[in-house]
Image (cartoon, rainbow, N blue to C red):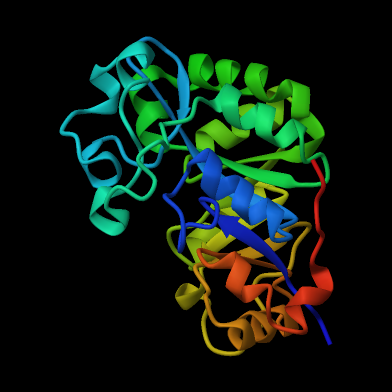
Length: 252
């Protein structure tokens, strides 16, 4: 029986604020071999781990990330007050440097680093990717750079030796041809977009689907040659007896 590897979507975001140090480390502590997080760019060119361009959903503070410097963001909490009230009030918006330091303490963990399209479009592909690759270089072997942005991924593929993953919006013939041309190391898509019971497109890539919180469904996808399952609830998923076979308890 094929047993999937689980990827912690924005950390253990079911129980902790997304894209925070506490949520990412919780996922690694309960055995995640893979984590995923999002990277955006601030007004002064600093890279931070954050999903949206607007701050309010995860901080409770109105404002646009692209109009604020990193120094201004340092005092804003990323504690998701609507979900958690004040339980995680000490959680700040992490810089990419903060998360790189965390990953250095967990060298067996692989990170899917999603560079967001909005930042690429706002600040330019070359500058943004140069900053991203420079910051990730120290943990190069632990990182896979992913994005919806095909041109950015092609730039990384042509100019670096980082692995890349393309996040698909559509599962159709046009996307298949684009995948054949790009030749990413990973193809990533929402699990509901994979049709029927057929195996996904064959190729020299690995498939990952998101966002799955049912252990039996994860095992089903593994049987269809989808080895990576992204989940928001990784610690609970890893309690399933079969999924726990791929667990990796990490020491500091």
